[in-house]
Length: 635
Image (cartoon, rainbow, N blue to C red; front, top):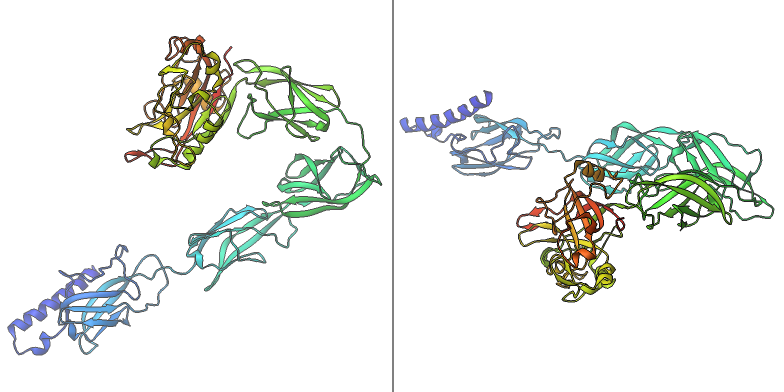
């Protein structure tokens, strides 16, 4: 209401001037009174309370009206404004330096225009001026706790002005990263031996020091007093107690890393390696230290002189405790994947036998674990119990009992690039061109060509293939010589699809070598692979969760040679994949009509798709990510 009245006041002032001039020719002084028009000609900029239109200190404001060349002064928020120009119908003035705190919302201030005498108000108006936030402001930090080396992010505004950060007594001027919105720095070591220390963080800029609300809890390992009654023997367990010991990444005796057998917050058990060389004298003293920190660059001395008797001892019998996949994210034991066997006294283990098959160790065993790769020759299509035996010290055998093995392959997060026209083909597409089903890997277009994955398909034609999904008779060995593979292409109407290599003689050329110009041959591929959507709810759930236990049970017969995005699959769906037998594709050809015609089978869970349609083209630089189940030859 107040603003409206002030606008009315300005309009009436203008009307009064014009009316009085018309009826009284002698009133020369009144005719020359300045008048601002904000009804039909707005101020420029015409600011508002919401901040949609803003004016700042130094902004030049233009007003329209009459007799404005007679304006004696302009004040904004009571301060004299510099008059830039005065003409009869136009007045331009500059917003003065208003001393108000910085904030996001504009301030409402009085805008006053005075007559030639500089004291008589001829116009008064509510105007809005923004005093923008240009000072460095800090809103907080995260995380709230961590150890030495933990990256801490300070959030706020205008943080590029921050020159250093104070962390307790330590000043940090080299940051991991810095922008207007955030500063990231690594928590340094401080002069404290407490397990958990509350640390104040502050930021320094040209305007002073900004204290940040809340404290960061810096945690470090703290060991209880440890004494040694007698020298440790080779293979001995040493139990250390304390607080935050789960932060320890290594325990060393001099330069020798001890094996961590068990680890928790309040205790850590290390084993003296049984393979240390004998010293003369046999008992050796070295410092026992613990390593911690994100960069593993912090060291704590547990005992200045830890004694070890290096006299060799005969190997103790290994004790089995567990077996599990080495890679995280896998909950079962599959063919071709590495597993870690844990226990005690494993340094003398020489090899393993699983389901009667001897397998070599991957690397050297330690006293607490040994690794091997599950052999591909284990038979079957469904999970089964097999015997595991550890062979140690020249042929002794340790019966580890029966374990569950899934006799097929399972590989997570395989990323397959698309194939398409040269203009949208990327380095990623060339490097991630072909999914090799037997190996559970994605290879480049160069590797596909140079390693002769499909040797009969490296020219302009393939003598094995007589037509779409049809193999010539009398070529069984050559057919099976090419490992089954699939790849992706983009059709002319932007349909992103998986491809059976023997389906079309024009699909391979969608892929190019690393120069991104040289196309692969326009020829039929050899392996006949069919795919299709899987609708069985039980199979879909097991494949998506990584819990499929029988790869051939309820196996659907698939008949799609090029399943298309949106039509056959999308993110979260499951596609079946089947490699057909030579006897079928060299006679009838086409999709299988009976399970006996399927040589190998599997499923793909569509974990992610990052190559969506972008306008009229498939967006470049993306991929389709799948989890792959794949069988051996079906029994």
